[in-house]
Amino acid sequence: MKATLTVTDRGVVSLPAKMRSLLGIRGKDVLIAETTPEGILLRSTVTLPVELYAPERIEEFDSEEAALAKVLKRKKL
Image (cartoon, rainbow, N blue to C red):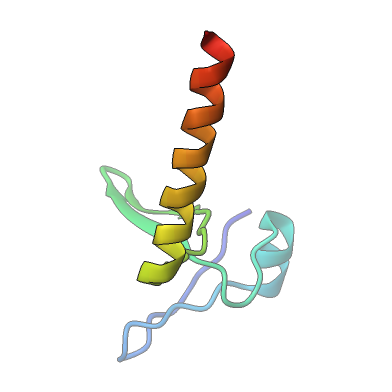
């Protein structure tokens, strides 16, 4: 499928609804724009949420890992 697109003064490009539907692109999706010898290539990407842990939560992880290490050490004997 080919389409002629217009770039606004702000650099915004709109993809036709049929093209978005065909490719499964929805609002708020993130695309990668890459320059190629032929022009611009748009590719879908996957974004994953990042979870930030408070120091208290990190201490919980460390405590549980230490407890697990003791159990595993006992099982090796």
